[in-house]
Length: 181
Image (cartoon, rainbow, N blue to C red; front, side, top):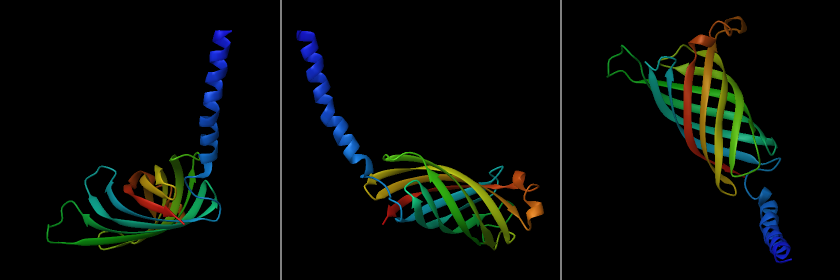
């Protein structure tokens, strides 16, 4: 009897915790129709990490569902190209559309996605690119998150080049902060 009473009291004590967690389910993160804005530092390098760049990236997205966001991303970066003199400054930019899927509805949300856009500037051949990305968001406040993302981008002048150029792509890394509104 004493053991069953103890189990009953233990089960009752868990109910408020479960109810609080269920009530807090929607406290963090976006809802359908929300927007997001993020600002991040970016860095990247070619496949062999010989050439590198550092810059800023900004995203503006719209949530089609609480876990699906589409938007536009703008990046600007300074590039250090192997074999070039230190006095040469190379500035590059990229503009792309993106779509991401976020897993879960908790503070920590892994994500995967894809992008399609253009790269232009001093140290790159102006061209189109496609990219795959993976990362995570961690909500530190109900509508504020920290972001980490890695993208692999491959470049092409027309659709027939896309398969050939996958092996000559570039990595882009992003760490920043974002807001849902």
